[in-house]
Every structure is written in C-alpha cells, then in structure tokens.
Length: 558
Image (cartoon, rainbow, N blue to C red; front, side, top):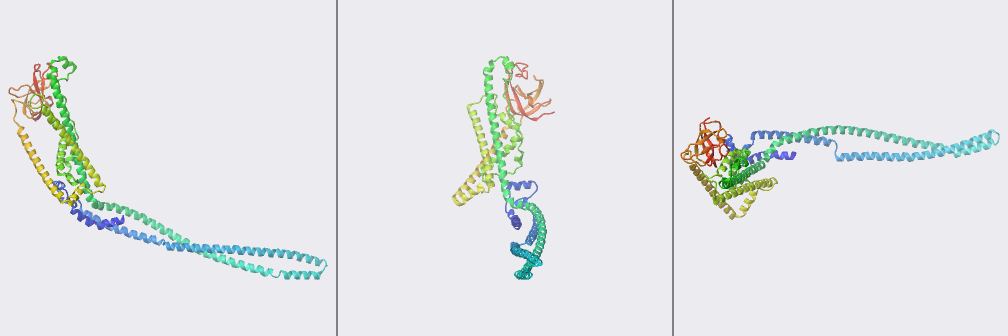
C-alpha cells in the first residue's frame, strides 16, 4: 500500500492537470451556470486548493510512515541476523557435544576405576584373612619363623596395590577438575545466553509496540489517501456517471412509452365499448320496458367509466441533465426520441387527469353520433400499434443502456470505441457516417418544423370565444344556473341559440356559483328516461336527447 500511496502522491499534480483536459458535457455546464457556478472541465468540480493541501498533509504523513518503517527495520535487525543466529546455534551445539564427550569419558574412566578398586579391595580382604590366620598360628607357637616368611611374601605380592589406588585417586581428581571447569564454562555461557534472551525479549516487546503503532498509522494513512484516490478515480467515475444518467433516462422513456401505450389501449377499448352501448341503446334498447332500466339494470344507459390512474410523479427525470445516449454509443435520433420520452414521462406522471381528458375526447367526435366509419377504426388501430412500437423501442433502449453500462464496468471498451476504430480503418465508412449525420440533422429540422406547424394549427383551432349556436369539444361555453336537478343539486345549462339541452356535468360544480365559464373537454350525448330516475336527471320529457359536458373551468365566481 505504501508503494501505491507513493505513486499516487507523485502523480497527483499530473492527475490534476489531466482533469483539466476532460470537458464536461454541455448540459452539465448549463446546469452549473444555472446554479451560479462556472464549471467547464472535470477539474472545476474538484476543490483544488483543499485537495492540494490535503495532498501535502498526506505527503508529510507518508514520510513519517516511511521513517517509522525504517526504525522498525533497524529494531528488527537488532534482534539478530540469520547468520548470527546460526553461529549461536553452532556454538551451543559444540558446547553440548563437549559435555557429551566429557560425560562419556567420566563414565568410562569411572567404571575402570571402580573395577580396579573392587579388585584391590578383594585382594586386600583376602590378604587380611591370611595375615590374621598366620598371626594366630604364630601366637599359638607353631612356626613363627615360617609366619614371617609368609608375611614377607604377601607383602611383596601386594606392593603395587597402594600406588595403583593413588593413581586412581589422581585420575579421579583430574576428572573432577574437568567437570568443575566444564560446569563453570557452561554456567557462564548460560548466564550470557539468558542475558541475550532477556535483551531479545525486551527488543521484541519494543518491536511489537512499534508494529502496533505502525498499523494504526498505516490505517490512518489509508483513510487519508481515500480523498486523493477519489481524484485518481474521477475520470472513470465520470464516465460511469454519464452511463448511469443515460440508463436512468432510458428507464424514464420506457416507463413513459409503456404508460402511454397502456392509456391509448384503454381509451381504444372504451371507445369501442361506447359504440357498442350506443348501438344497443339505439337498437334493441329502445324496445325495452322501463323495468329493465329501473329495476333489472339501472346502469344500462350509462357510459363506461373513465380510467384515470394516478401514476407517481417521476420528478427525478426533470432534475437529471440531458446528456443524451451519444456518450455511450447511441445515435442522435435516439437522443431526440429519449428527450421526447422523458418530457412526456414528466407530464404524464405529474398530472394524470389532463391526459385522461385528452383520451376521453377521442371517445366522442365533435358530432353527436358515436358510430364511426371503418377508416376511423383503422386509424385508431394504427395509433395503438405505433404506441406499442414506441413502448417496445424505449424498452429496448433501456435494456441497451443497462448492457452498455455492464460492459463498461467489466473493464471493456465503450461500444462507441469499436465504431470509431472501424471508421479509422475504413475512410469510406467515415464519409458515410458524416452523410448519415447530416441526414439525421435534416430529419431533426424537419421534425421540429412539423411540430411548430402542428402547434400553430392547434392554436388556430382552439378559440377562446364563447360558443352559443353549437357546442363541441374545445369550445368555450357559458353555463347558467336553471334550478335543482333530481339529485337536489343545482343544474347549469349552456347559454345557447337554438341549441338546447347542453348541461354541465355535476363533477364541475363546486358550491353554487352564479355561472361557470369553461372549455369543453368531454361531451356525452344521452336520451332522457322516465321522470325522477337517474336516466333523466334534469326533468326533461321522456325521449329528449340531451348532452352532459365536462369542462376545464376558466372562470367561476365563488
């Protein structure tokens, strides 16, 4: 670790200089300017002065750590080298061998002395018995002269016993002196070795204490170097950051497209259901008795309910920079599609009611009839298929972003790198790529112009004047109170000229305003049933056709 730290400290300034050469994405530069800061390179995101001060502090602590390593090596070397320990072991072995040899000598010589002393003792014991016997015989008066002769012979035969015993005593004294000398030498060596062991134990304790302090210092140094490691890893982290943003935006596009496809599919199903119910009510339903509407199926004349899901708001999509998929190898067209998907995801999830109202407007065309031609049905099916195709495309883009991010994290090159290498090898492919980019730019311009034209046409279609002779979706109507309906609530009728029976939906009524001015977003045509029933909430003649309008309130006095 210390070598890695030393390398990082040496390369710190070069790393800082390399960061200044990495340009931030334009969207990140714009976001920084919006927050009041100027950031154009990756170095601008780093607190340079603080990091340099921290690097200087880490350099000082690193030098102190190296000094502690040197002191530890010196202390460890004082414990002895391998050669010195081998020499000491050799000397201990020689002393041990010397003791063994001396012990064998003492044992062999002692046994010899013991055997000779035993023979001398046996001879002396035997001669003593003979002497006593000769003396006793001489005392009794039998052959005194012979007794002296026998004693003389015995004295001459045992003349070498005393010198032999003295010689054995001298040998024993010499062995004792050798033993004493060897013991003294061994005790001195043992004293020296015990002293060396004591000194070594003290040195080992000091080394262990130094190792503990060194470990703590190394751990603290590692913690301090983490900040500088952030700087060295910042280019790779920035690349992964761009990849992560692209993946998340692809996810938002996939969710947005899937939700849009689902809503369009539900709207198509409801439109078909409205047509089927209208056909029934205009056909067989006209011949049913009131009991079928009042008792058996009270909801038979009502339209299918609106499906208005409350999707969670994806606010993080609005706060993420639009880096586009080009940074991870995508195309500019995919980037534009993703931008549209993200904006639609934001509008979709932030408020589901306006979108439901847009879908509901497709349930009823401007005219009062709900039966449409086969061409219109085919167009709806084409719209559904295009929405599903967009959802599938966004889902594939999201999965592609995940795969790209996984490949880059595994250490491989970015997919865009392989394309650039292929272009470098083939000049014609580069020319073709430039032509394709120009074509994409032209298509983007055409798409923008079409969007501008579409918005202008939509603005021209929407009029803020109050309608009175006819009422259709997107018209502005003025609803005036006319009394109480069947539910006891106040009813509001559109101000009109020869266009009666356009009532305001009770969902738009809050309190008892004097009038309601609103833009029609949904219109439902019904036929009045029996008086006093839910099929005739406004007290009209049976069979009278009337319209219930849902509006976007523009002005309503409290």
